[in-house]
Image (cartoon, rainbow, N blue to C red):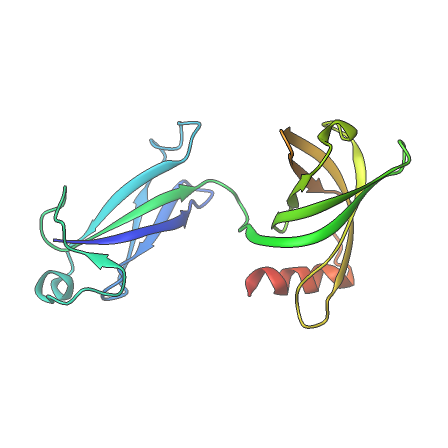
Length: 184
């Protein structure tokens, strides 16, 4: 029995998750609605028993053959991701401006998604949940694209802050660049 390293799997809105066999590429869709009731992340193990996978002895890169818990085939360990949008891990310098408080705060962006950002700040007491702000940062793409978005501070945990983009749903120039950046 082959065990394959952990993968992140996004859960569809219909509470189904699709995993791909790392050996033969066959897709397997499973109902994970019973697992989504938990508040924390959920790790699962899915067994592929494709004919090609149960007969082939060689392991793909990162594979392991400890045989724990699955009999025959390829076992994929996965973490179910509840977020609707992919989050890209980054380390970018940025600025958050709170116009109503007349405060400018230097930040380090940690994650970017289609819907918002996560960043570290030296003095989190300057920010409050629900504050409206302007986030400004440059992507590390070939154009060093400037992104300036209105945000609402949603969550503050110690020095890490989560902010959601706000505004119109219409496409503005840097949204295209941000979308492209997230896909690469």
